Length: 140
Image 1 (cartoon, rainbow, N blue to C red):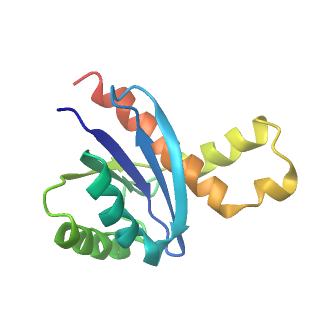
Image 2: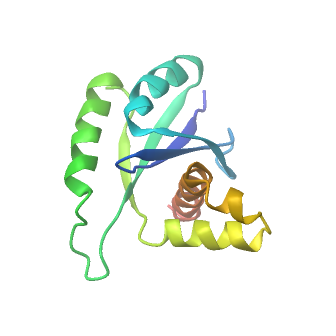
């Protein structure tokens, strides 16, 4: 049976998490957690839900070189593969997700205090990352 996709907008301090609906049409923000809590959270989450694929942001610089956080993401992915070996992980270019997320929150009229809520930005970033992946995935 069909599962869902889950996307992670990895950050050194916080990681945003988004999920698709069962038809893989809509991405929704699930949560944002302290990065050290993400793997235990995912292990529990994947016991309850059939996650078909994990999409992890691939932050590149404008010139396509690797960003500084990439080494940490690769270490995180190694740990994730050990914890959830059956779930394939794909990377997706996330160059503009945080900026788009911030602008989306700004345009939604969320008040300033809420806008400064980094967890909200991370959750929205993960949602945008996942929606962006879905728009490409649908055409493959």
